[in-house]
Length: 215
Image (cartoon, rainbow, N blue to C red; front, top):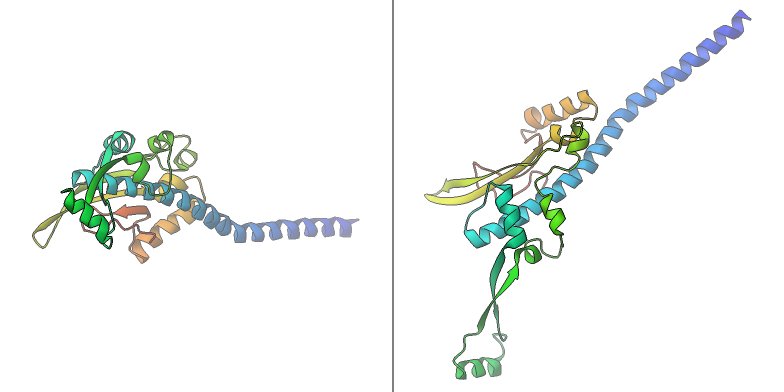
């Protein structure tokens, strides 16, 4: 009887140890899987912010640090473009334009919402969400976090260049995950890789051509 009890206890211990070992192995795996999925969503939205900022700069010659201004621009503004009426190789068409005293350029306008995102189409409701970091509510007990965004000028060779940045610290969308693994991730980004601990596009202190730190 005593031997049977001992065997049962040992079996339970083995099962518990096996589970702990499995959990120890799988915890970082699950962390990375969730981190990568959330990063993908954050990158997609911050890329949309970059597209909107580039459209804004095309019209106004600068970026904006205000989400209200940026979102209003996308929802309400029109952008002006130029196109050729006939191909530069079309001698007959060019001759007709010359005879009619017309330039081979036509100006036209397009709504910002229909052009700044390229082939990607966003609804007005999706554009209103541009300021919010995906998964931030889930990571922060229901509190939705906004991207940190700013705009300014940097001087390069006596020329002032418009710049902007938008960023989402890891804590804003990963805080509900394993605490120690999150600490390790942030420490590695900051002190080993010397990178921003999160997702970031652009920079307020140097001209980066609006590059993202994931690119």
